Image (cartoon, rainbow, N blue to C red):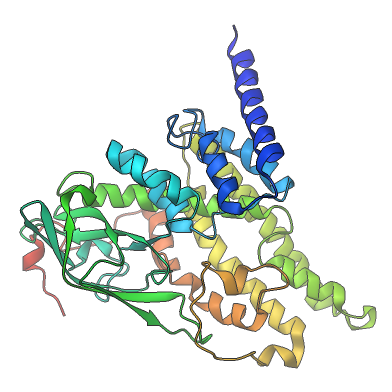
Length: 407
């Protein structure tokens, strides 16, 4: 049997499973649909069988996603972005069999929401300099420290945590990776109110919080390698989000809707040109992310992932700048500054047409070039890893973390 015929049979099997999923489960509760998707191996097709996958080429996830989008099936990625996009792949790559059996399915069904706790007040762009400590005490670890800018921690059951377990080692080699019950004793989640009035972000305080060693992911001291895998999956996740929106998706659709609502005599050609340019830019971004995913599936990842991360945040800002211009004087108004804690990441800026608050979306996207790594860091990554430029000097890289001066 030729490879092409095998590939045809594989695609046919995936399509058959998708059809079964849609026929038997579409229209029911979203969690039941996602559970059936997991059981059919269509959650992450490249994962092993029995773990939400079929052990197939990751490129075949396109077959699943495109069919589900076309059928208006419920999507769980924005509802549990850190879980579906980051925790799941990290657990399959580094977790134990027990961890995978316990966590993967409820993660995909959104019964258990995840957050990610890497950044700290003194360790944002340089995550490896973090100070939150995990000290071994028998079969447990005792956590002390603070994390910040943690999206959706207020609704999360679990948190991905990077902590320092060996202060005498250089900063990249003294870290260990855990997952933490966000409701455990000694863990406090406080809202960080943004200029929209909402609090999508949080800060977390650990005060002698105890977690079992069974919640460690990967080897002691190997946390940096696990964290890098998580961050690489974050880039892949962003590509998948961009792909799921489809043509005319993302925030540019709001600008197009406003343009179509304007009377023909009030359609400024300058604004029209800006709208056309943003539409083209959005399509370039979408196709770039598709190309990145295809290259990863073929085993030859390129710079598209890093480019996409940079482009997404800046594109969203430009789109919302046009949106407030299209709104005219109304763009200066905001509905309210009531304290809210969203249940879906990016809900204000990326919600459905009948739910999104455009003025708050404009304010929310201001932080897009900071969160998840600043645009300056993204450009450094491209310069060093793609263009081969010299690394930025770091005098603290190879000395014990305990000897690094701290403010």
